[in-house]
Image: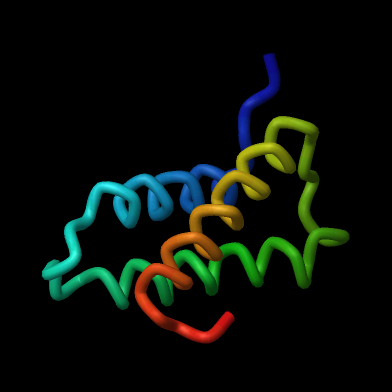
Length: 77
């Protein structure tokens, strides 16, 4: 099959780490910020990247985690 783009892999890895982090984890906000940056970069500059359907699926899932965890953490989205 097709290989996912590095940004999509990064976003999924960050979303997984954020999902596994506990409420008291001091790195939680940093993970949220990094995930938001990766998803925003992919969205803003999607026309410059050779994304395939797998990438779009992975980025959408990572974006969903970003919104969910941001809301849980009380960060205005």
